[in-house]
Length: 419
Image (cartoon, one colour):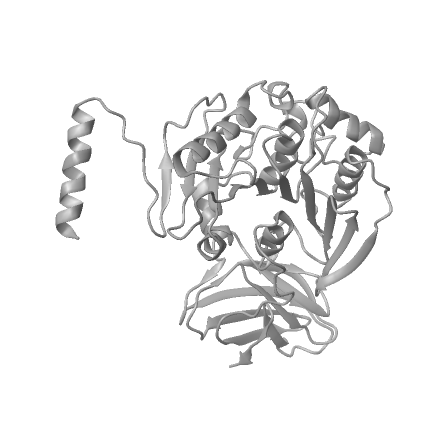
């Protein structure tokens, strides 16, 4: 193996001095950056994950991060790469470079970004897809888009602008295509789009924006899956309704779902024919996708079969609560330990507060609701718990005399021991 590496290194050096560009190769369990992937008006960075085991023409998934994130960060903090190892598809991770006042975000606001072939980030992303098709043999008939927050917004964007490129999309915490008027309208708090009621248009108005993005297009439209947490205040939950109105109108569907169900606790799904489905995640804030949601997106894309509606966390878990109480207040620290043999990714911990307790603030996780049965979801920096390791989270609460520790801990779908 050492001799082979030395030979390869020498060959790369020789070709470099000869002025020949050597395209990067993806290797086992590695994320590779591609620096010359084609037309790149958005000045974006591209990373790609290509599993060793894959068919001759694998599907391709473009997975896009939220504001302030990056492609490598979304690779580490989501389940798409591990699922790619299992199901043999390529994952493209773009990194946005547009400053939006609170970190780098995908451009969904400029005139260029709202016109097919107009420039900016959408053109760069299509170049990445073309590169992956040519370099790794990706199947041009099975290209999908997904993303979180800014990436969810760009998922709506790509499906509207390039319906001939993408077969389906899964947008987490996004907004309808064409929601933002311009760059000044983008930042939360100052935006008419994400402000309360500011994005209220008719289904036809939303649908017209999509149809105008690629005038004259008569081909098949990509199917759309939409996700939003009911407690999301950064990108308000009400925008899920606007997204549903946009895509059902594009497909000429009724605003009344053809079916509703709860495929997993807290996941309320509405289906509109075979083309659109929407998930309302009860109590979730701006924290999607969480465990199991990537698998549900892949099932919608048709890459995988129907996922286990309640996939178990590998191995076992334990939680050690420590409570410090005073008068009518307390703090509780929870040490979550992975006692199994496999890494836990994108975790959520459900537990029950004692009667009369109300959470007022927390750290190292998001908490919702504030009373009764609470779910704590990982922060962006602690979503992985390796075997034998722990994650410490906690919260401050008020109480009415009962300062008992929380109980009934369930990590994802596995009950945890206490102590």
